[in-house]
Image 1 (cartoon, rainbow, N blue to C red):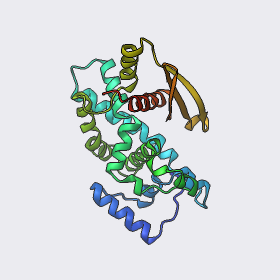
Image 2 (spheres, one colour):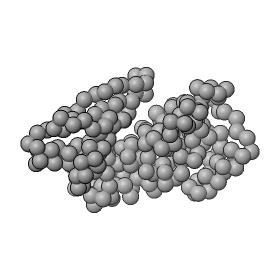
Image 3 (tube, rainbow, N blue to C red):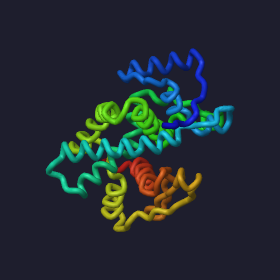
Image 4 (cartoon, rainbow, N blue to C red):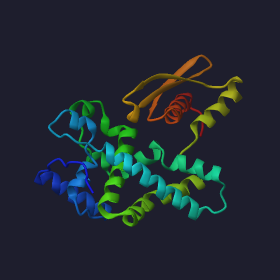
Amino acid sequence: MKFDSFPEIDAKRKALLVSFQKSVKIKFKNILLLNLAFVHRSCSNESDVHCNNERLEFLGDSVLGLVTVSLLYSNLPDKSEGDLAKIKSIVVSADTLSNIARELQLDNMILLGRGEELSGGREKKTLLADALEAFFGAYYLDSGYHAAFKLIKRYIEPEIERVRNKKGYQDYKSLLQEASQQHWKIYPVYRQVKCTGPEHDRYFWIEVVINGKVFGPGMGKNKKTAEQEAARMAIEELQIAV
């Protein structure tokens, strides 16, 4: 099987990767593959490194989806397809995945270009979520599906329980709509401000208007995520209880 080319790593970077593996309690056969999972495209754009983690992210997204669906199907036999789909969308959202990424301290592992670093890239939810998916994809390639399943289960299963117990991610759009109807008898209006990036890696910027006031814009890799982020910002500014 042919993989992407791997950027070289020095002794300091290798030591950091080894320490990371110990903290997560896993071990890669190919440490260069692990390193590639943390190479953001901004780094490859601004250096001699001609590869990044986008392909691993693409793979990891599918592996994560399969593991999550398997867990939902096995653990929630009483839930309908619609309920399972709703829980899955929350569990694999950028909000949830970025929190897991911070828990694993991936923000310290990511290699960024100078421009992305200066713009606060290490704090961006979508960037952290992408790095986590790339990490899952890399581990799948390195150690197989069974090992990847065990790793992903360790972090995703607790998130499923949080959603079941209503302690996890909130549906901010629904909460905002309920508050807007209650206070002003109107519905929030969402407007796309801009869309950036190539077709396979787009970012959407969406704002929400309530009673003539604009909130946001929220950013996400799809319109639903961006709308949720805009709604969250509106709820926070309006001090609506969640």
